Length: 213
Image (cartoon, rainbow, N blue to C red):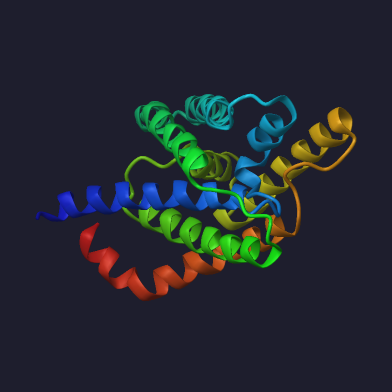
């Protein structure tokens, strides 16, 4: 298989693993990843479909990216932005499928084990798909666009964007349900753990990735 073929294969496998990780994150019921906390909290409060709400949020991310790239006169990136829409559609359909077929446990120990697998899968999936430098998923794409717009590092932008998502989720939860929904100890562990998994992945496979790009 050619290098280009391997890149596409790793990209799609990475996205598949990422979706699995995000779904497991919701099934642990200990607090979800910040990037999906808004659609998850709304789905829990309204019973609207989680995957459909995630697609709406991702579409909003894409619109924001297009506005930023037009403002920065980076018109070539708009094509990549638009390609995130069909990617999001597939991504969120997989979320729905996994959500149906992966059960939820009430056992506290099992929930922490599920959370651990969620963090590992999310980190590996994100690292695999992003490192292939193809079309980013909207959650990563908007962080990159905001970083360029405000001339900030990706790490700092990611942290600030996660905080913004959590603040919005908390506001929705408190004002609508008068309780916290979707945010918990699992959210904190995910924020810290996923980054470490991504760093570990790149330290192990970084030299092989360079050969493919």
